[in-house]
Length: 464
Image (cartoon, rainbow, N blue to C red; front, side):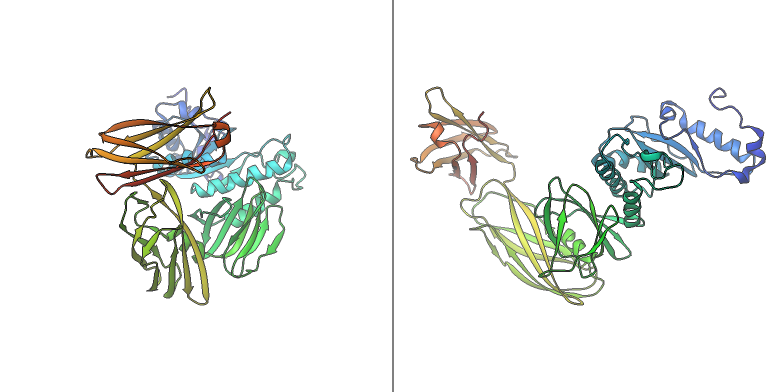
């Protein structure tokens, strides 16, 4: 230990007031993580500072990913987290989450891309990294090599580099915020919702240019990462938001509107593929800071039924609500996910329309269906039906299986006495090339129970 930790020079002990928090190692140093007795070593270093009456926070440079155990019990200390080069920002939350166990304050070091990369890509990377750090709950974020020509934020002469504006825009928008969650968007744009003192801040980005619609209140401002600000008034009750690969910030949002959306869900997120009504409920919470009334309606896929499908509610501030219903599937409801739209006409300080889309899964996984389509050498189409019985406790299953393709005669097979395991059946149709691109429907009607299973697929989608 003495070789690793020589006594501190006497000036450090004699002039403690000149020293504040101390980082052991630098941003690129992962050597501390290889020390087996790191906690003891850190305590010894603290003792050296204590001799001079100064008790600084001892910082540990911590590169991620790394398998080293997170140190604990170090008192006033912090982790200076530095993701390794090449780590995608979407990995930050999962990589950083284990460091919470240290119970130390955590700092994150963000490393801009080198100046050899296009400036737009460097700015996008920087902003996404800052957003990811905030999602991960890291309270302090620093940039490496701040004064470093075009590679940093400021040139040696004090002039800002091109990355300064994206850094400033992002940090001003995100400082002091708490991550709330992410909404499902119509055009699948990536989005993150933050809140600060009742104000909502939304970050949006997408792989390809698109437009999203959201209801975020009357004071929304779109902030581009290069500093331009544009007010976004509501049109027919919603903002129209241009989204692209370059992130944008929406500030001044009414936080209670996206938070209402995030609070809504189904009590049971999956339905059994059965005939007859199945109990369920819509659950949520009033995210306004005052009592509200609301008219609620649910829009189901074609042929589905709900009883009831409309409700009137009165809820106090922050009060949870539960809206019971019974849902009946259509006879041709396919296994998989179905989108359900839930509309809220909320009366608070002013009327607000909140549209929520949630997914209900059809099928509990106790019975699975798969179909493999093959083009045979003689030109025929062969379809292999696979039925898997996963029931617990075991049920012995009996099914009538009907295969339908437009323009072709319906074919029927029977599955008899299927215990836990799988059953395979074959169907053959003429002229596979002519059938490529058509949809097939497979219906399995249980003969000794209530299951009614459906599967649809496009013929030849996986053919080369």
